[in-house]
Image (tube, rainbow, N blue to C red):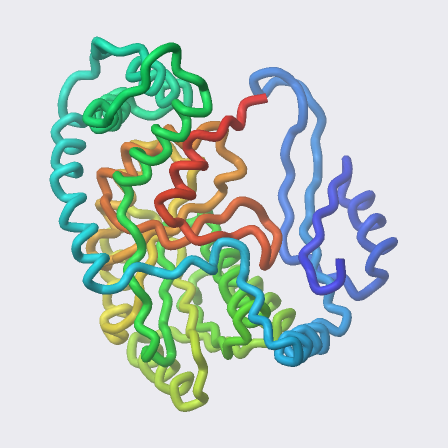
Length: 385
């Protein structure tokens, strides 16, 4: 548990704190908490639960240094879960995105049409369609996927569930845009996270920073634009102290440019920028974020979206944040959604690569690269009890 974010829960805050002290003494640092109801039926009844997330601050920096030194001695670079996939080359990426354009046009057309259950002349196609519907994929998207499956050589006889799932996974993955290659000469690599309040930007920043340090031995810096919410700055400061990275707080676009330049002079490999959470309906705040990001034209801009958000709201958020010219998506709270298929239509309509996916609160573990195959896996897996 040392060097990790631990989770505790109990009926009251006093009981939770007693549990924390029994494990960490006075050295545990609370970095997050929430209250929710457990049990009951349709939100009625059940009991109140207090949940807190606590960082073990005991010799954290020494722990990181020991891990890095041991990895160097062994000559093995342990890749983080999901971060070891080699990106496509620039030419391959362009070819892939070109071939996706026709499929995306089909999807746009289908989403504008009325939804009717299609008729199938082969039982395998029917089973493929039913699997997608069971996973709450929009019927129009399911129809589009099955149309592509119909172009294949279909199996004879009664289709097995494994064959159905494998075929659907392969074809569904083709609808998602792969991640573009990372420029190996970009130093530092600047990653900016934008998105509405409450989607988990700050926690995702902490996961990315810790992963880059621990698993890739990279030198990382943090920058926050979130002076509007003091609590968010405090939370990121705590994370920065735990993992041993510098944090700069900026309040003007010129200060952001200066901060990134300072990180470059310090030979940092990566700079992670946390922006203020804003309502996507606030045009003035959208313009403010866009002004900040305009001073770092080489930065990757990742729009953070929660999978617990309604598909229609995701679409609205994406349209409102278009003014900041984001080029990638990050999906959070996958572990909290019953069926990820419900957001597939919105994701395909946005048509941007999904760079990362988070599926829990643990820092730095619960994060993975959002390659198309993994997204298809998450859509098809059942989370219903």
